[in-house]
Length: 301
Image (cartoon, rainbow, N blue to C red; front, side, top):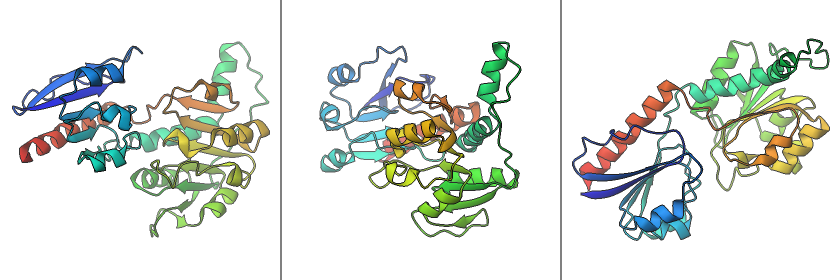
């Protein structure tokens, strides 16, 4: 019987999903009230062998509190919050939950683009205050505009496919050479200088951290829209702040991963709370994949 610890301070999972697993003793900690204490939970359950987790500060200090840990199942696609070097040194296997989002995140990214291009948030706010004279908020027609997608993985391709319906012209930059009918591959600097709308669809790693920074944000076409549905740290905050305040970017949309209030002060920024994936269909897929992954691991131990 493996001791499993399920950590979750976000949307709650049904706590019966592992009941059919005879080789797992699952302890649940689900609390999104703000009183979640990761360190205290880890110290209380230091005999944990399997950790099932969403975004947590799983650095070496916290992971060392679980000396018997052998397997981490991340319910996320992203695993940058897990100290992979520590896991490698201590023979801890790390597995993520890939592609559970289906079309949900791509659709959310396009929704952020539409909200920015059509000034939906501005209109909604002004009209609710009784102001119907909104001539200062002029939108952008998307048909024929140039789009740059940074990272042409599954989500990037889904975005490109949706944008075909808007008659937008897609270019993309990608770590490896890729040929697709959905767009034309180019280098990052060209993409930034030519695109009217830019999408970030990348995982966070040493190569992608601050991929949008002070050095290259000045190359962005004036008045462009920047959309990020990937980790916040892909964009250097001070560079984003300058670009929005200066008008280099007309608008930006971020599915914000952190709870950092400094973003709240930025002009012309639409923020959603890391819920781009959160649809009924995506959540169902995620649960199914997590259960299958744990089942397969227990079957082979």
